[in-house]
Image (cartoon, rainbow, N blue to C red; front, side):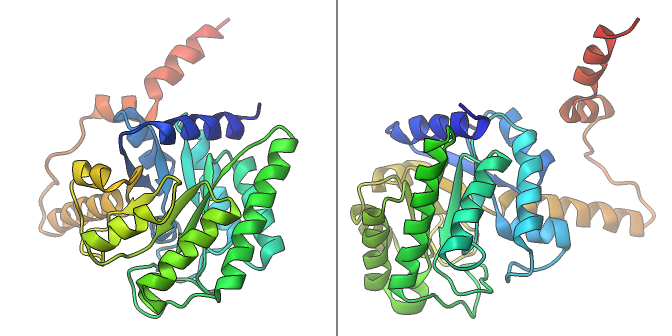
Length: 292
């Protein structure tokens, strides 16, 4: 069994549990490592956050497949927990979707998200997004599922997270129809982006018998509900896509403001803890084993 297949199986077992899994999202290897060290059982590589951290650019399709899968490779190498990867639209037609799914599996991801926006896509809580027609959307998920089955036949594995943004462009009914169609096409996890109320969130969870993902974006379109409420509604995963990036950016802005005022930033992580988190002490122990 490949590493990706092992992580996929771990994620599958996690999703079979009745309780909600809280999933802080990462944007680089360090943030992923911190999530695992804090005791979380799964994380998600946010395309918005990777685009911001790696390129300093907005999530509007500017980051390429090669750049984001490379970021994911580093994230998966830095952790042992399952990582779900943002695969955007699959970066092309159905054949491109298959390549994307297999590339994410090779990078070490436990699951990959494929969505139904047109390219260039954009963050689901920003203006200007549009979706492809339902037939093309379903074809993407069918291609992703076919790639999953081809991986399994070769000893690999990856889960397919199917996302629709149709709620924001065509209304709730069309969004739910796509959820049902993606379920029938064989998606493992379903994600309706940007429902606008708790009632809409309940309708989504009732539209599929597969695990579902709630996107808890602060100040976004969807109500940010407590984990126990999300679990009662029927969600399996609660993603917090920009919380860590936002906290990190605010801390850096505050530190820079202190420097600008001629002061030294306060409330820093102490030197010993910094080295421990990054792995210096483990490195020194390993180095000692091979001293002549």
